[in-house]
Image 1 (tube, helix red, strand yellow):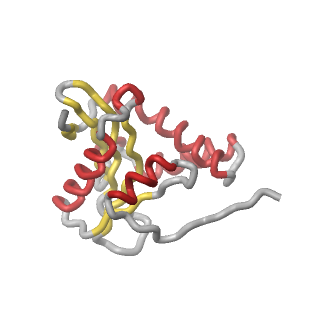
Image 2 (cartoon, rainbow, N blue to C red):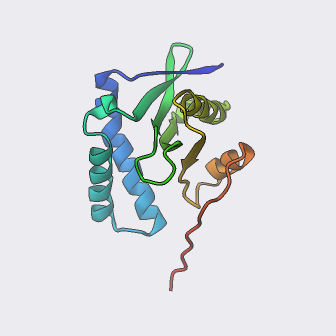
Image 3 (cartoon, rainbow, N blue to C red):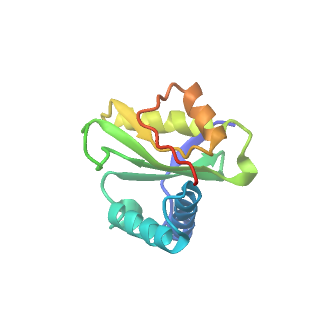
Length: 157
């Protein structure tokens, strides 16, 4: 089934945001960057800074991924990226395919929709972060032509 994007309702956003923050904090902890309490604080701080007006914040495009009439996940795209650098660069802050919908090619479709949305907003490039342990996502991004811009490495002692 082909995916499409639609804006979330306020209730959907209110349910998604704490889960997104928790997932972001868990990724920070898994990377070894911060302990859980600090990661949770960082996740809340980062999302609050980026989304002062929730999903209505200018430049922050938050969508439900829809498979027909059924929700299949989320896409959070920033246009342009506020982190500096290229004013024509979009940033994928979050992409999530619901667990029950995985394995159907929706991740690929969602990324292609993100690229189209970025182009429609005048962006000439799109970037994202992916954690090293997320081999499925890394393989998807590689197959879509994304290139590594920087890489952090760590070795426990």
